[in-house]
Image (tube, rainbow, N blue to C red; front, top):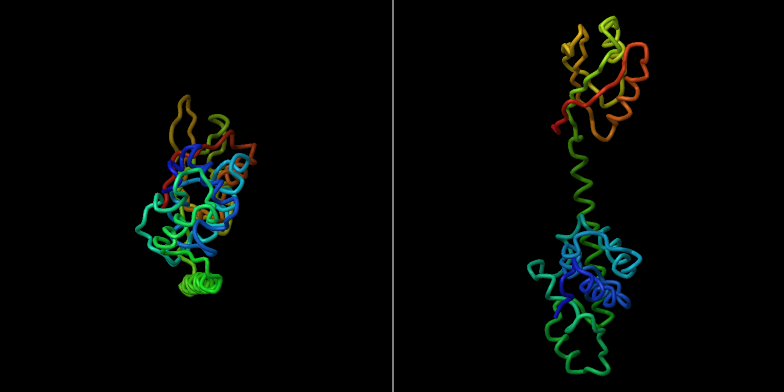
Length: 230
């Protein structure tokens, strides 16, 4: 049983056939079966070659934050799920024995519409509870980085004090300037090396460099010498 290697074309083709007439791997609501197969696929498939897998993958991706709350046994491997012989499609009318065997081992899905509706309602309730709990905790600390920028002047006659003054004059929410020093480059030329702390979601380093380089009278170019997450 199973789809085979889901990183290979054969496995993805089998999964695509399986999902052609299904919204989920098992039953009518997301379960740990979907989580196991989602993780085995590992990345979004080629939408042209595997349109049904692509549709399913994007839908299950919306539940990533709630994977642990979905019903089912999270310890079961991906090979637990799928057709008896990939990529064959199940035909219950022609294979009653196989259908009966599926009934015996299917721990997550059911052909009973009432039971499936209850399962889907339970999954939705758990997802809502998870999101409410997450919202109650409030946002976590903002992600920050410490960056060392090098600002290079045109020549040895450039007013470095004025250049640094213009750099520090750039003020933004989420930007804090730190210590600086002048480093000799050669031929009497020095470059400005300055540290700064930025909030990653608020400050684009590329845009900040462009803003510094707009001081064309003093600045020849800028480079990121170092960057580290805090």
